[in-house]
Length: 279
Image (cartoon, rainbow, N blue to C red; front, top):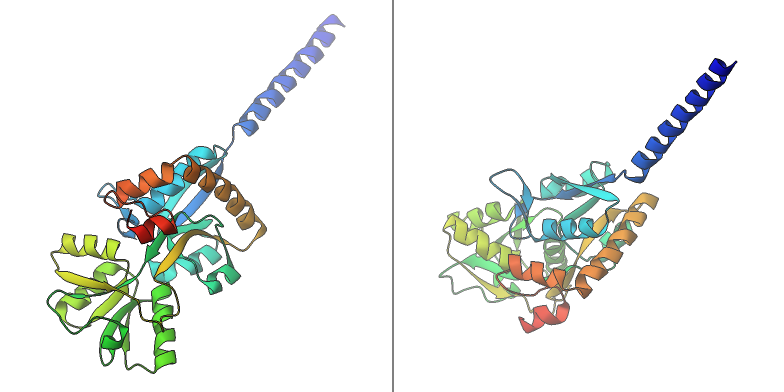
């Protein structure tokens, strides 16, 4: 009888130990969050020689992850022209790839309500040209434009609104391809963030010039907020809300400003006021 009681007690003890261990494992478990990023748009996002994702977009998400220990982050580099389809297909949980605010995007996806960057677009062309000063000068010319980018949509709207004779030569969104088209003379210009464009042009040995877009017909202001983008699902909203809280903390403690200065040549582009002031 004593032996039986001892066996039962030992069994209950082992079950208790197992349950306790399981509870500890569950308490320490983390949720994997996959982050889609183009990986070809430095200094916003790129892949290092070691095959690691890097750039401002990536660094911001890593900083967010540091404030959300319940998550572990994995980056998934993907071509721009397939990035939204991949998000909708569940290949990753959010996009961090210099996504500018657009009404159509806000209607279709959850955008972080806290911008983590502000940017602007410029006309970019080969150095030495004296015939391009504004959008009006693109009449009769060819412009390289990435499929699905905000600047491409705005250019299409501009053409419809003004009737301008501008031929759009679509690319996959990789700025290297657009710059190569300009260098070889297959196109006359492109519209892009001058930060990334200048850095990429320098690495390729291409000489370029640029002018900010100030034409009144341009459907967007030259300054645009940049956001993380999530699928419009219950889980996507949960992630958005968590990331918003962390982004707000990173703004308040100066971490975003420090990251901006690290990746953007000492400049702070984390607020509209800083960008416009050239801080």
